[in-house]
Each structure stands twice: as C-alpha cells, then as structure tokens.
Length: 206
Image (cartoon, rainbow, N blue to C red; front, side):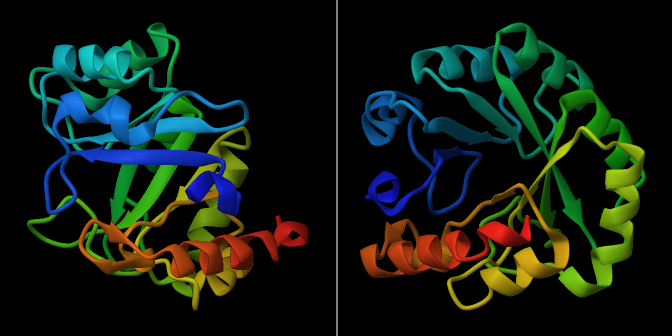
C-alpha cells in the first residue's frame, strides 16, 4: 500500500513500543525487496550483534539507530552498519529548538541524520512534532557545516502538516507512522495516500 502510494522507504519497528515487531516477522511485514524502495528497521538498545543479525535476516538497506546499542557506542554502531554495506540513520532526539552538540559529528559520520522530538521516557512514535520554525536557523547551520548530510525529519508528521514542515526545514526524507494511523500500529490507507500526495506536491521545494 505504501509503495503504491509512492513511498520510497518502507519500515518496521524493533525499538519497542506499541508497534514493536518480532525479529522473525520483519521479512514478512516488509515483503520482498522492490526496485526503487529501501527497507528500514528502527532499533533501540539491542546488542549490536543482534542488530546486525536481524538486518541480514530482513535484507535491510537502512538501519535506523534510535538509541545507543547495548555494548557499543553509537559511533561504533554506525561504523559497523556501514561495514556491512548498509546505510546508518542515527536519530537525534531534539529538545526544544536547540540541536544537541553531537549533531554535526553524527551527521558527518553517517552521512544521514534523523531529527525526532525528545519526549522523556520514550524513544519515538509519540506523535509529538518538532518546532520546525524555531529550528530553521540551527538546521541551516548544520547543513552548512556538513553539506553532504541528508536530513530525515520525523516526529508528529501528518497529512495536515507535512507541507509546512517541508517548507520550513527542507528535509530530504520525511518519516511518518502515528500520523497515518487509526490506532497504534494500524495504518489508515486513506491517510497514507493523503500523506504521500501532500509530500509529492512539495517536490519543487527541495
């Protein structure tokens, strides 16, 4: 359904919360690899060896690192994912309108950076949006200091607000989950289509 709507990425959650899937379910949920569509899974504090094993099992293209893996630093995890021939998406959980000090280092190391809202006690999937306008200057400065980094924007995106988010921060990728659901983990086909249509309408902005 997501691919038919025009999604370039399909993903699944291994980091906990109401959308958590068993590792063995990843291949069935993501389906067969498709041309032009990259496969992502979101990991939390699992040991790095488990993350690498599950990534191989699910034939992932991208590993989103939403927390520091057990037994390794985030930098070590990024390097390991890249050595395995996959793309690492480190997540920066942003409190307020100030990017954490490690933003540039993570962006430079991975070549990608995911921005999500910081909600105490939760890794993600909260439906809380970032202050896009308040972050404009900091994101612009990050792009200037790490010009080759691609920016992924998550956190509270919905069909009703994604155009504004894109207009203000110009992300390379937008990441949605709760914003197209009728209940946690249950996607609404109509909202998926509405979200995709809204994103594609902004093609000339980025």
